[in-house]
Image (tube, rainbow, N blue to C red; front, side, top):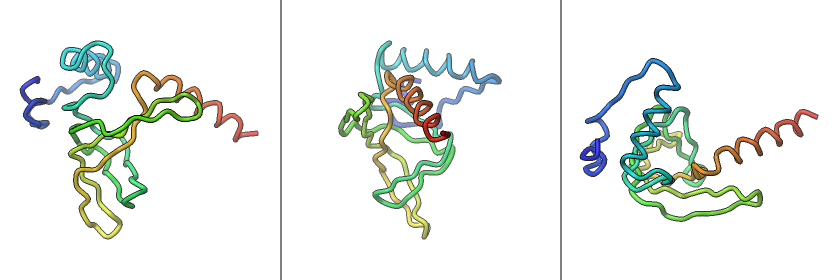
Length: 131
């Protein structure tokens, strides 16, 4: 696994599980073994999208199930709610509405440490919107 990450060979190692809980637990253990217990996203990290990802600045979309690798962490930001986000330079390819390839996309993600805070804020905003 470590060799695949170092060389960017994301298709050389696959783990298939039956239950989502098993997948989550295995992903966490593998990430900790490769990058450390409390690490956030790291250079070399491999990601698989579970939904399409819009790139507003390029008007492109990274497709569902796309597999990418983090090349670098470009920048970090903190929003008005104290939620940390990172800008990840990736090997990802997006496609415009005309089908044009947009290579090496930068994506914005919520820091792993703030996912709970982010989900809580989304729930608060959703409850206000329902009123």
